[in-house]
Every structure is written in structure tokens, then in C-alpha cells.
Image (cartoon, rainbow over all chains, first blue to last red; front, side):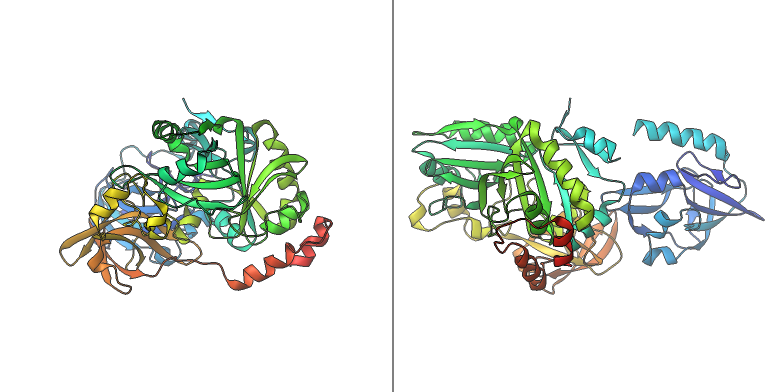
Length: 129
Length: 391
């Protein structure tokens, strides 16, 4: 599993890239995409939708199951990655390029982890599953 | 506590994702992923461990008479070495399981049942047993593999004498040598492709699995888990017990009427009176193609306008079709092909259309090309040569 140092991570397995000026790009981590298996469908929110930290804002489906994606911040959706609607498999191919949304927020999340702390969490979870 | 199959170590070594299923820890998928496994079965072949399935023997002079009472499909006329499918009904006409019945001889039948129902089926069968029939549950002594896909016949011809393999679908060969193991081989499956199911004494199964894996690369065969088994059977519209059929769904509602013999010749069977009393079913299984964005899953409500007219029994994205599909039980007034319906997917209405089943059926071309490989040849070709022959 790879976790780029330049990103922040939520315990619910999303990565966050600060873009400056209160903008953030959000996607699923390598651990998340491996745990999901083949992603076959992504249901994205609309630009302007409200985001609440810790609440589901999107769902992704693998062949077998539906999983919620939780927002790592409180704010609003700015853009969605519409390319994923037709090619959800991009999440498996390159989860750090296949971002889900960009968002605007007044503050970063309270519990974001750096790459090393998240890697430890992901490896611990991988062992129990 | 879940049990494991004799191949557990093989699955773990291969990096399979394992999960509890019907009392066993079973491989759901291998690192290749469900879609690659699905595609391998459609285009080449897949190897499945289905040792969790149950095997019950019915033996005795009264066995046929007993099976005609027990099962709604008629086993009279089932020739030796023939296989026939039947739902198993309760007194109210609901389905308690479905089974494949293989005729081993005039007084001996093998009944293959779902893993989750082995104990309840065996109890049910003993409760309704009569006459000169003995029943044996040999599930724990037997391991079962499935080789499925257009290259299945070519693969099996490397490890067994092609003359001895079952030639026609729904027949079997008793006790032939497969990888030098005595095996009972039936030409059956649950994928919508040509294929074989191989029954062996449990301690011998690793030898057959290893022999199949040794030649797998020559044929593009990969091991497949229960995830692909489910998407494959769903595309082929094969019903799954506990989903399309339950103890409160009759086989007629499930669209399985051709496996219910109501003519007088068969005589009485468990559930017959209830089916007759119910008359024409008011709901039927249909196929839905999702036309809106979303994947209908089991339990999703199906609507026509504001009225709920049924529910989804199984649904997924269908890898070979390139769209999401579902099987649903709906009011018969809405079952016509082309009917526009809506499915409630977690609070969101998504449009769907009733389509003809199955979603997927294998092409004639595939049948023709695989037929070449099971012409009796009298000797086994080296597998590399055979591989070239088929490609």
C-alpha cells in the first residue's frame, strides 16, 4: 500500500490534498480501494451540496457491496470528478489521481493524520480483516 | 465456528479474500478481482472450489418412488448417468432448497444441495422418507471442484480420457480418472457456460486442484471465488436459493414452472396441493436492466409510478453486459418486456426496464468450437498442442 507524504488522511480512509485558499481535493486511499475490490459505480454529490465532517457524502459500489464515503471536513462541494461516473475503475487503477470532489471549507478536519500515522492505522485494519 | 474446505491452504497461499459463507470460510475472490475472474470464465475458463455444497445419497428399491414424492420435478425417465434439476418444496408450495439429482443406477441417486441447507434438507428428507429407501449424507467426505468456461472441455481432456468425459450437458461419468484420482464428473455448472463439476474423496482434492492449476496457464484458466460465481449465475439468470426462491416464494412465481411436473402421470408430491390451490401466480420473477444511474440491490423496492409492485431479489453490475441488472419479483401485470419501472436505491428513484431473461447466453460459436475438443480422439494430446488446436 502506498500513502503519499504530501497528503493528509482521515481515519475513515479518505485522502485530502490542501489546494490553498480554503480548497481541498478529496479521494479514496489505497487501503480503501483495495478493501473495496473492483469499483463498478460511484454516486457523487452535486456542486454546492453541504458537507459535514464524518457524514456520508458519496457512495461507491464494488461488485459485491455498497460503501459510504465520509466527508473529512465541513464545508461545501465545489467540483465533482465527473469522469468517474463513466469510469469508476479509475479508483482501482490510480486512487490518488482519481479524486472524487474538491471542497471549500473554513478549517481543516480536527483529526486528520499524516501519511505515517495513517499507514499504521491502515496496516492495523488490514490485519484484522 | 466456521469450517474450512480441504483447499483452504491453497486459497490462503493464493492470496484469496476469504469470508464466511454457509458455515464455511470460502474464497470470495482472488487478487485478480471478481471482474477478471468473471471474464476468464466467459472467454477461457475458471476453477472453483465448491466443496461447501452438500451431497446426499438415496438408495433402495423405493428410491425413485420416494424422489417422485419429495421433488416437484419428475425423476421418472431420468436415465442412468443423467442429471435433472428440481426445486424442493414445503407443504405450502414454497421452496426450501433446489437440487441436482444424478441417477447412478436403478436404485441409487445422488442429490446435490446448497451448502446452507444440508442439515435442514437431510432432516426434511428423513422426515418424509418412506418405503425401501436409505438416505446418506456424505457431504463431509466429498470435495467438489467446478471447471467452467468455453475451454473447460479442453482442460478436462488433458487430465482425463476424453472418451470417458460426459459428452452432453446434464450427464455425468461415474468414477473416471481425473489427474489419477477416481472422480465422479458431471457436465453441469452455475455460470451459463459449458463446464464440469468434479466430485472426489475429500483427501484427494488437492491433487486434482494442483493438476488443474499446473495446466491453467496454458488455457487462460484462473481460480475464481464465490463473487464471480454470483455475477456469472446472475447474468445467466440462474436463481439462487434464499434470493429468487425462498420458503415463501413458489417455483411458479420464481419462473421455474418447467421444473414443476403437474400432469397426472407424476402423481402427488409435497407442495402439489398448495400450488394447485394457489392457481396462477400473481407475481413473477423478471429481469430488470437499469436505465438510470445506479445498481439495484437485493431488497430494493420496485415501483410503477407511486405504487410499489415488487422488490429486487438479486442485483449487481453485469460485467459481460456492461450495464447493471437485477432479478426482481413483481406483480404479473408489470412483467411484460419493455415495461418501464423504477427502483428505490437507498432513497433515490432510478429507472429500469423489464428485459428478457437470461441477460447473457453463450453464443453458438462458443459451443461449436468447444465441441471439436470433445470429439473422441482416443488419446490425450499434450496440453500445449491442444492449446494451439483450440486457439
